[in-house]
Image (cartoon, rainbow, N blue to C red):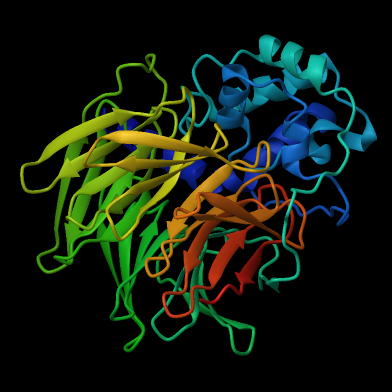
Length: 462
């Protein structure tokens, strides 16, 4: 029996490490080129600057729960664009959609080692729905009032890498996780040059990152199921086993490193590492009652609030939760829009919780005091807001989109959005960070498959 568990663990780890490298390629290629699974790095393909964005292609689909569920199941690793929907310039047939969907479910369905697709995804019904609506390419569209020319891009040193998370260090450099190269990267904005920092762990698969005021790095290593600490002054690494494939990380005021288990369920788990003692503790999150057996909830982001409580999102569970470390009690709150896909989140200085509702195309504000939500629809249809981060000095909420090739700013005082167009088409923004000194916004984007990855700087200033 232990041997079987070890084997399942190895299989799960393999899928976890290679999913973003192969899942998008499988979806796009297998229906044309026959069955197969790419476990290498994602292939890059070129899009013309004037091509429609992924949001324009998604706008071909009718609004409603079916669309939001499709977005949650089928757009997390790669954009939905002409390369997916119109291979060779022609719309896919119903049979082609069904074959591709069936293979994707076999690879990443609810009962596989990497369950990112919901249990009720039906290949025949999906194919009928897509072939009925995706019949002609959309025309390029520009968001009204969009701003151009404020963004500088830095091509990533490894064109087949996937920069997953980034943060601005106290010295102004930008630290980046190289998920596919198994390395850390540092960008010097003054010179535009990257330097690499190897991780002394085989197939480290770095994905999430937290930097302290002391400049130390805390990095989640997906495949090895570890938290790694790096001291830039001594250039020494130390690793800690946490026993699960993690997704998000943040340090609290006591120095504990909080994390969540990306595919944990029944129970879903969050936990912390205490570096002072090496202790690792985990806490079971109450089950999401709406989910069917074998589905979700797919724990996603995790943030520590100003009051020390720990908050998390469930991508398929469609809720947020709060954990009080002092009482070890949980509270959960269902999102107001069904299948909204709460993804990456942040707190402002007043304690408000800002939520990127990925599938609902909204930014939500949750007030922990009143326990009330308020939603704001993005000015670009089907932009797919992936992450929200708050400039703690100005109060501006910044949103990285996964389908609109844009960074979006939201001013809570005026309740108005500003759209900043990226110079690159096909940019799936997975992470952003705000420079606390200048207010400038940094973003990391790429896709699997997709464009060669880039790091971008939006110069905002205060």
